[in-house]
Image (cartoon, rainbow, N blue to C red; front, top):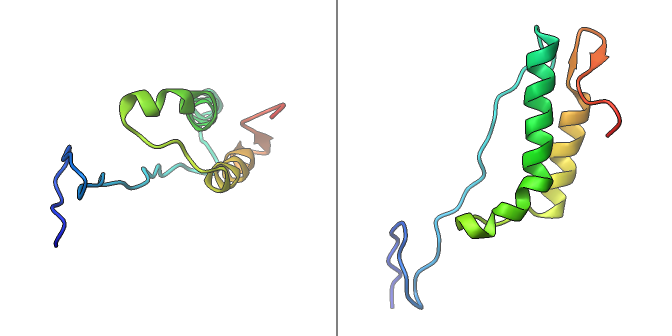
Amino acid sequence: MGYWLAAGATGAAAYPISSYTYLLVYDDAKDMDKGQALARFMWWATHEGQKYAKGLDYAPLPASVVSKVEAKLKALHSGGTKLLDGV
């Protein structure tokens, strides 16, 4: 018995096509305000935003991925100033 792959397929032999979404972000933002807005959005999407995943037919991020994203986000800066304070 083979498997049929199709987006939105249903049935016992079907499974979702899944992958991570990647963002390419400068680690040293040229514009502090834009850098902070992007970093805060990515932090929200990685944490609070995960509660929306299941309702949108996405799988929540595993804890191991969240911790890796957190480390990268905490390292973002503009000049010598970190983009995320207090996280």
